Image (cartoon, rainbow, N blue to C red; front, side):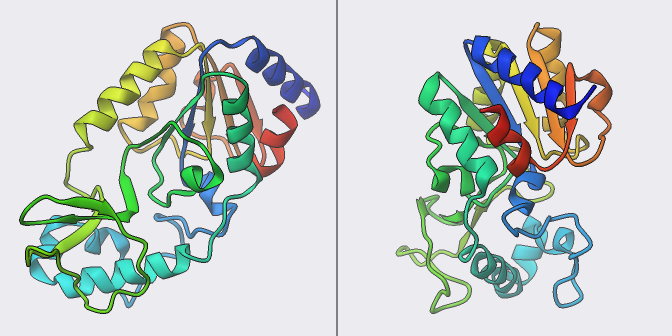
Length: 240
């Protein structure tokens, strides 16, 4: 089907939807210039991100881990939301709308979305490894690496590392939204990272109309009601 007809079909479905929902992944942020975590822009000082984003790496060398995150935060401090982020804000202006995101960059909130479930945390939050205090902190750069809490404990990035459980409250909220939605937009996700990879099929089994917007086909494309291959920053503004 012609892409313009697919866009029209999704637009009509979105207008009828009572409780639409979006699931976003690295692809939507890549259009803002955020390097994809699993991409070929991969090595940092000869370390793969997967080697540094672990509790074990932090216990072994918190300074090295924080230097990596300081580098990431510095890159992200220059990044702005793109047209896809702002298109999702416009949906929220019309009707109840939520976003479940796998991204940690905070760009949805920066664009103006107010109901965002961050499955993997947020790189602009820090948490004390001793007292458990958690807060937003956009300091770039920190004067001291690794940074410390007022209690003297080491601060860590407020993100979910490899080997850690997803936050229970975020996961519970995501499942609530999936149960309630009648239309789900799946935007820029690889379709391989669990549990998010199963969210679209969960929504579809419950009767939701499910749409994938991604430059390429993914392992979950065959389950979708509509698949639009293209950049979210080009497709979403046409839909909304």
